[in-house]
Length: 494
View (cartoon, rainbow, N blue to C red):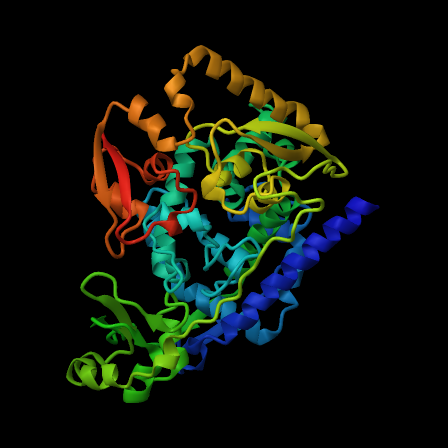
């Protein structure tokens, strides 16, 4: 009874978030522009959803779930305008996605993931901090070349986020045996999927593996299948002249920090149009990284901007650049003693406490993914206020599900056996992670000073054989956003 109620709650939450995304989608500037996707949506429907999906012969999730028809009925029940907006926006992206996935050697059915998880709302934000039409995580974005900072988040740019999504999927297709597992690894983390495979057995079916993944995984498959059917049945018919010249926005260079309101004031361009064309600038502020930043403006404004850019910069108001951000803190632990000391006598119903010994180079994000827990929970259980100050050799308390305690405890035993066999020199037991890598890495040590606009991804590209993950490990950095201009980073060239 409890599980049924829990499942119903998950379904309700998913449909609610999907509806919210469609409402936000309808608020985008493009739908108030009569020149955007001029044409008509041709509505239709099918009676047998399972049969229609099977005829699509999709290489992704070919077996129809029991919930697919229900989610298809939900899509059909949406207000007409919301359905029109979804179909119209999908038609806007479809050809580009098909071409991009074909070029990358990936199945074109991947194009249905974005509408299924975000409703193609470029400003969508997931409950776990995922963002954009592909709901990329912070690390998926940064490790694949996107910039994510307080003022810029390129996950919200459909073009850039699609590149990152494609890169992640190419990696996952090489990692997992089936396309389905590659997609689930993208959505739920590769470690979580690998753990599910370990629980279910190496040759287990997808149905068996899904038992060890969150309930929302099965719901995603249903949403994916229903969305594919919905977008195949309902099509957009353009009435634009196919021979007419395509209107493409202009791109201008910004050499000084600027606010959208300055541009809007001088050129009378609607603010929401600038926001639609430049969703990566989160506070309507365009910061300058390096010599210049790029700004997209409507077609025909390039000449005007070059001519009147001094007027734009002079339309300055310091109040436009005062950001107010809400500080969110995790609630204090019960019986808290002092930072760094685990919570005394903490017990959680249905959970078993295990001990994890920190190794050199460990970061909380990786540990959390390995044990299928949240970073904030790790910090709460162990009273950690600054995750950059965790030390090798210290123990962490981790609470895992009772039925998985033996498996995760086994991970610890394997780790201890590896430590014994490795025969680590005494000097490597120091607290500083850098000291570990100075002793064990055979590469040439280089000191890199972080420059404006650099990220672990761009830095790694400058050194042969170095990955963004290497840079984070070597410098004991758990959050790529925390590197600062002028900071010295250790890099080992191979």
